[in-house]
Amino acid sequence: MKPAPFAYAKARSLDHAIELLARDDARILAGGQSLIATLNMRLSRPAVLVDINGLDGLDKISRANGQLRIGALVRHVKAENSTEIARSAPLIALAMPHIGHPAIRNRGTVGGSIAFADPAAELPACLLALGGEVEIAGPQGRRIVHADEFFKGLFETALMPHDVLASIRLPAATAATRVGFAEFARRHGDYAMVGLAACARAEGDTLSDVRLVYFGVGSVPVRVRNAERSLERSDVEGALSALRTDLHPTEDLQASAAVKAHLAAVLLRRVARQLASPRSADVAA
Image 1 (cartoon, one colour):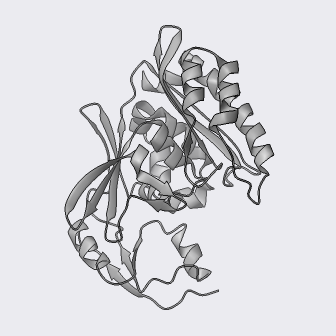
Image 2 (cartoon, rainbow, N blue to C red; image 1 turned 180 degrees about the vertical axis):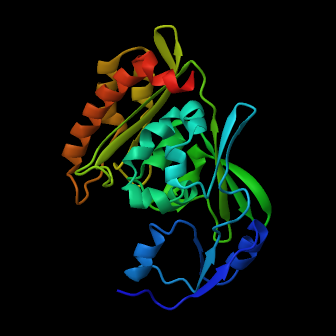
Image 3 (tube, rainbow, N blue to C red; image 1 turned 45 degrees about the vertical axis):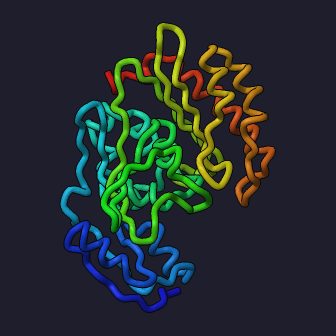
């Protein structure tokens, strides 16, 4: 199918983009990997597309004051090949090869993935697992929203209609950082049936500040807090038991709720081993 008619506007600056978004039914065009598909199927019918590609500073990766900043327009392929991300956000480095296929990663953007908030996508779960923040520019200026408050529901976030996601900010990894990532997909590059992103801090032979975030199991990325506390006590079996009360997967076209629950337990065992291994912090050392 072809998209419904729409106008096109090229933003000259971030402020100009916000001004253009004040028009009725305007949508942002960045990587377009989700938007173009919904346009062609006429699931989206915006009156105007606001092209933010090329805006100065939104395609940069930088580290300062113990924090990694990834601009919204950073392409997946740039993030995948970034030595700074590998060093400062090894969980992101682990997740990147699982995102779509090379053609998708060549155009798709980090900010687009976070803003679209597909519950089966890798990066929203990683952002939540890392305790990151989202920098948002809007008509009233800039604000920071913590990942725990950013994802509101199915494809719903804290972004308002006239807002632009400017960057994500992540605590930079240290030698004590441990990360884990695993997912089940029918084919490599497909959306995950179930996935798990995790981060923790090693204190001797134990873990603290464990964050376990599942994706592909509900309308938003899901933290399993009781399982987290069990892993902090080095109790993997307890974490698996807690998972049965923490996690209630929703059935979809890919798998039943029972299959997803089984896969979630398998992933927890795998990721627990990753978190226990000092090798998971090699890229951060």
